[in-house]
Image 1 (cartoon, helix red, strand yellow):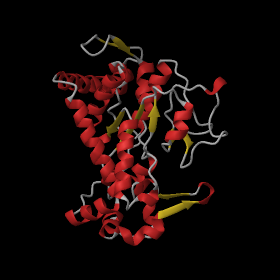
Image 2 (spheres, helix red, strand yellow; image 1 turned 30 degrees about the vertical axis):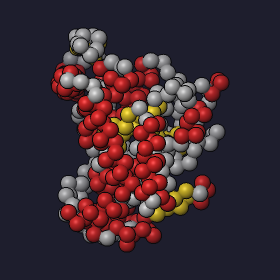
Image 3 (cartoon, helix red, strand yellow; image 1 turned 135 degrees about the vertical axis):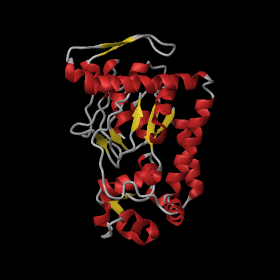
Image 4 (cartoon, one colour; image 1 turned 90 degrees about the vertical axis):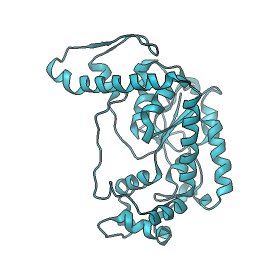
Length: 310
């Protein structure tokens, strides 16, 4: 889910913020808090942004960033996330599932695979399961708490207080417009590339589970579903609070995003030095779209849940 990470990175670069960055990759650290050797240090250990992948750790982040820092993340529907993880981590091989449709096989009896799907990282005393509550895990909830729904509910309520916004991939346009408003950004800061990048296709990607399989999944990934349902309601509450002109801005954003994406992928092939001027609107000052802007909005999709701080 690299669109949000690219947006945060672009904003950071355009506004001369000092990011906390991993030394070697887009990962800062996972699944443990960063060690001193994992990230690039700045004088005085002062940082303004983080857009590299790491597991949310409230204590560690609060020690590194100012008290008024905004925390932002992006999640997706749990069945979609499970399919992506199955493919990305090659989980059918790990689980010894050889059927043509490993998602269907898994969902018929997910508890059967528990001993194979769990991984214990001894060096940091952490258990991870790529099939179960992966998004909640990336946001700091322990795998061992999968069956403790009271603890999960308390933790997710805490996340609601901690995060300025958790975006939903299934409602990315609405999420981006809301992000712009809550952060007082400009429209140019939240335009995403509509052309798919590095989209992974696999045989079970479009599979629609049966009602029984979805019941099994909701039990197996109960914390992830609680997380998703909670922030789904939160998203629409926040949108409703924006008033009637939100829909007008959303329509404007969608049309603008489509036009900019066409320009970046088609028009520049014919006229490499051509630029377009986006006139001022009710929601943004005028700005120019050129080759550099196009380079900045290119996205790479990832299965990970990123914690972005600004």
